[in-house]
Length: 314
Image (cartoon, rainbow, N blue to C red; front, top):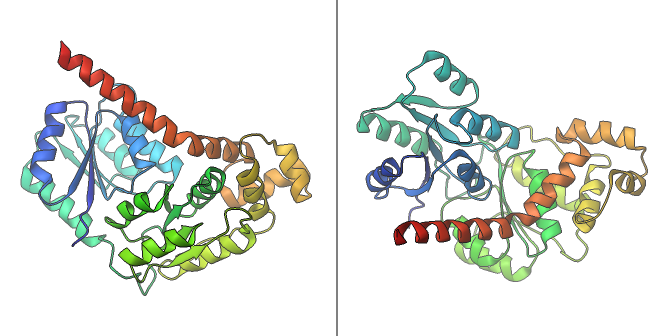
């Protein structure tokens, strides 16, 4: 069965979201988000091929979403679809990484051609590419260990795209729509399940009880390098920092990390920021957020269901 590209439509008009769903669902998997923050929640947990992004939304605007994607290191194709017919806004959207800017009302044929150009040009191959690609490398992390999954996901997002899931079922759902550069697993049973769906999968197995990041990270970067040029390595004390945060993400400090790796806090800050483009404090905060994300997502879904039920009851 062919892997369908994933389209995320973001707009505060539910009628337009319904129209996108009706028009595109025969060819693509269509996700919808009613505002910018909901879109970011999806984009941090799902691999999306094309985003159809409105500009004027309550809360986080379309430009705010584009800026957040850049800072989070999330690469995807964004088509701005907006009623704002303003050259300055369009240029700012393109500067922030949008691929195209369509003004409402737009011709459906133009939208379909644009989506097809982006999805067919960047469609994942069944086998890993044999030459370097301009797209970012993509890792799928599968582990029930929250610390391992979260610390590795945040670290690898400084090098490419990441899907981080808990179990084999979620991993197979990811593999039904994309082919990552590497699959990192912490159980042999998960590796077997992945091989059953994708026999050629590039798999790296690590022990969740004692993950060796000094070996794990180079293996991942090597897998990235099969199809992508110039992927930066994690060097010096950085693998040991990631290992420490993996084991102690709920309660640790910069001082404790510095003592573990044998550096002053000032020297650690300099080395870490140079490789990771974030501070150690920011890294710890993002790991905590990543670890809490599954529970937060459940809470948001429960709240959304409750809101819809109340609205319908009226």
